[in-house]
Length: 284
Image (cartoon, rainbow, N blue to C red; front, side):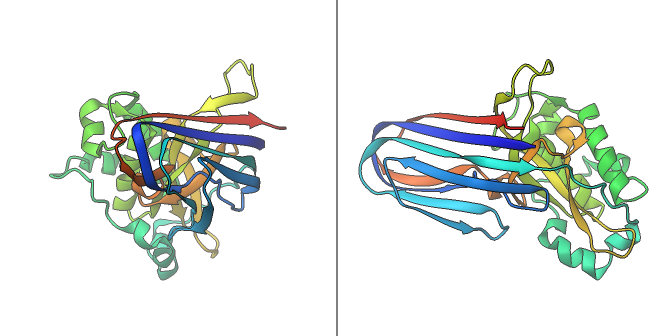
């Protein structure tokens, strides 16, 4: 699939601010199932931008607005082409214990800091385990939406897995943080993915839609035929593996590694109104 993407965020401050520095993570990732063309970023007030890849490989665009201003607008747009991933590998548990697997998994095998104490998740951890890592990932994609309701408004960007459990629901970010715990407890390397999901109306009435930033996971699955392990995307919020309607921006250990924008400024603008929009248009 081919998409045109347009991300725009605007801040309106209650007073003048200056010396503002921001880091953007909104450029789609390049990979075996995704190619990017002509992506560009525009900042108002005008600012020079600098691009680099962070520790996890996500493209970051830095910029600084030194002069006084009471409004900031950032627009990022370009095209991306995706294709459906291949069938996930189905290597057994023994292949997830070898040196090649653990070396590739790295820090994405480590326990997370937000696992609830006192065995709260023990039953979920037991229920999600399958006959091999692939079936465990597939079970996860069915189990979590069965147990938890998608419910915007009951959690927020700083919510914990405890908040998800208490509310009985949440949003994609909460689901992903829980998924990371469950997979890593079984020795499956897993990482947080930020991006967009093209979800046209069921009646197919339009090829251009406003979307929210979405989150899913990538799990490292061992090969069954002697090849190396592969990162496989899965979207437990939507009960599916990631496909060609998923556009990846980047990945990290958790949400805090891949926020769309974060920064600092000085000045009197202690209060700020913030608007953000993302438009995806299918081109094929």
